[in-house]
Length: 157
Length: 157
Image (cartoon, rainbow over all chains, first blue to last red; front, side, top):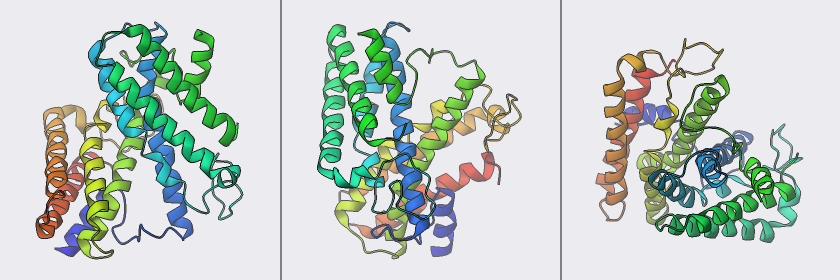
């Protein structure tokens, strides 16, 4: 069974032979960078329609809004485990990332901003269950400001 | 406020001016492909440690296993909206994708496989709440086989 499982797991995107607890090799670091970039892209996809509704570019659709907001609230906690040691700009290994080295120096602030995103998206998902679209619009802006605040500080232009 | 929101939303990864309901332009198709590839990569990241535990490459950690299984169960429904019209191999626009054109012909089967992944990951998350590690291992294999089945049929080698 193990060989079959190995083959099937490879189809899922990763070798099952990797030791995930200890990220040390260059390939592990590249995987972590690819993971966090992917998770952040998925977040971007789901916030897109929320922003478009908040701005009036597309009509407000309560079901769609709530669904996207739920997704965001879940996704907000995912990317951060990809910021492993040795994965920031200038850490060597020829890594390709916009994540600035200052993240390591400001780790507490970086974690605090992650927590803010988690909280603000949870609030958005809760608001999306109600009917106060004005409050939803304001909360979309608060979520978007959280994205921007982190990027302004920690992402290369 | 709108200009500020637009700037902040851009930081979240997408222009808020896009019309998400109607995917028609080449750039929209590229965004959809990037989204589904990102979502599938995120799935791969989370199944990795589950496979490693199932194979005995790393020690079973109940909390870690349950957390990854919960993530998988949530993520399993996400990638599919990225398979928009015009986004398969050979659909033109110079698109770069491994998703075979036959998906369009076999759409019912493709959707059925999505549903299977959603169900099997939900079962895994439920099993992960218990203490039958043998059943968890079997279910990881079932999830991995689901990945492989779809890739064998619908993804270019």
